[in-house]
Image (cartoon, rainbow, N blue to C red; front, side, top):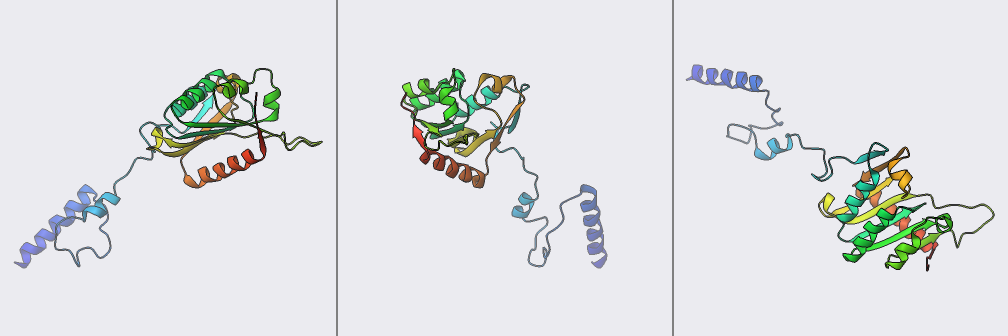
Length: 216
């Protein structure tokens, strides 16, 4: 009987080494009379994909090789609740159309921009305003001898299909202009981490308080 048990033990050891099974957790076998590993432990040892969602195979994009405009519009189209934008310069009509379409779907949309954008020749603030999108101009209440522009470029999304209907954000170097979206050397990054999103949300809300609403 002892010879049979010893033979079985040798075969088991050889099988484990041959198949490179995961390391057995400490203490296993003292309280278990089973062959194999606990299912929960085996599941934890499996490699999981680092991709956040099937619709987000990438989270970093660079122009001119990537179409930043297309990526941003795709995210806006999949938003269900709220889009909040802070951008220094806004002259891209296609991005205006994406925000207006979201507004028509019942999504809450709002934009903060710098006062220099209001003075820019091809700005789209009036287009947004005419379609009911609130626009806030930062700098009107902070005029001084030395200007302090609102130079951010980020977008907050509160309930997006690309992240299983959770919040996410886009941040990078690109203004919302045609040149930045497809000609300049620029970047956008998609962030899913709640702590970063919360920090940017608080900053957006603070800037809104320090801005004046655009009235056309």
